[in-house]
Length: 142
Image (tube, rainbow, N blue to C red):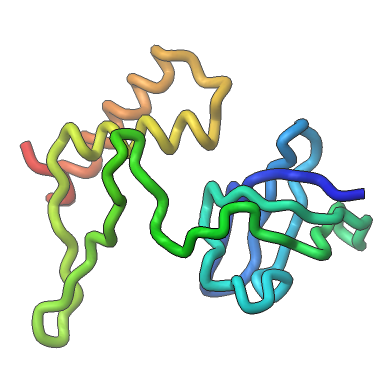
């Protein structure tokens, strides 16, 4: 029987991650090779359909199918395309510094997607700490 869910964690280096079933329940392990030629589409938040089987360590996805067929990056909540923030300067990779408002919006969306049961005050506190941490590393303006 097929199930639907979204990728909630993915380790691109190791090639595996976990799916949160839409109807709730135990997270389901998957390997990027399960996506075949669509492996390049694997990312957090990607909606997928899969068959879950019991494995040695819990549920594992089989027959994975991507429900979102567009190969473009996901849209931001404001309708803008989210573009990579890494650029090269000679041999060195550099990251763009985000504006505080852009960073706060991205963190808020991530928290709502990954932990929708958080209260508004919890989200505000987590965002505040993320901003302080990011400013101390020069990742955010202001």
